[in-house]
Image 1 (tube, one colour):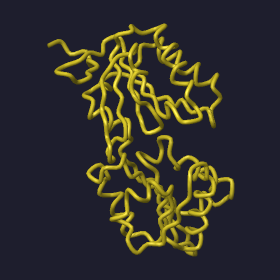
Image 2 (spheres, one colour; image 1 turned 30 degrees about the vertical axis):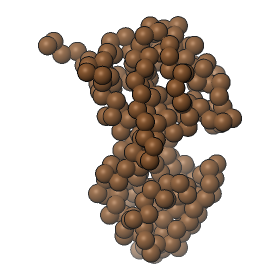
Image 3 (cartoon, one colour; image 1 turned 90 degrees about the vertical axis):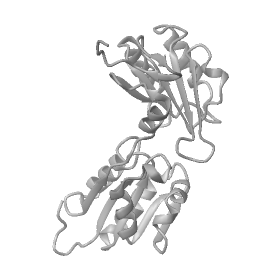
Image 4 (tube, helix red, strand yellow; image 1 turned 60 degrees about the vertical axis):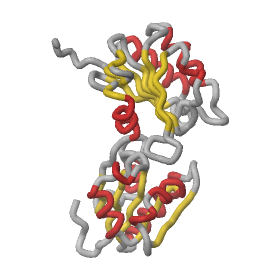
Length: 252
């Protein structure tokens, strides 16, 4: 998108990957180093400190996503180069969709230059560490019912389980939402063997990273929280030298 003659600002929606600097794309690093303003959740800003020295930094806490988007858009409309950051990829449970919606509602979506800079989703980083569990069809589902009704989440989980898809679970458990992961396990056991491989990847790419491969029956015996990604295998998922693998279907 080309900015108008009177508009020199630009809004970059930047994915910074799961946390490890080796997983941030060169394009994302270049944008961060060349922008004027960086806006983001304070914990994510800490992950990119080496690349934003000397920038104007605007941080805020959880549940203030609309405020962050509006602030970033306003700065870009003033002519600044602005990076609004998301962990992982900005289009995967990130800020890209919300920013585009707000810009459209303000009727500036066609006038403001907006560029989406993709990043490595945490689910892909987690899968790489656990083996190759996503080699065949898979579904990604968040258990957070803050924005999506629980009945909708249940419907999606049920259909993904019935379709024998590998299921990747985001936001499985928080201090205020501890029952959803138990419900999800009970639901999946209706359609999967209890010994179905399950991978738990916690703090992927960050300090304190832990990786656990267990099974559907025992998955709740391990620590699961908001920084944990849960990958539930399908009927063909197996272990190869202690790594999860979902066969693609090659005859070997």
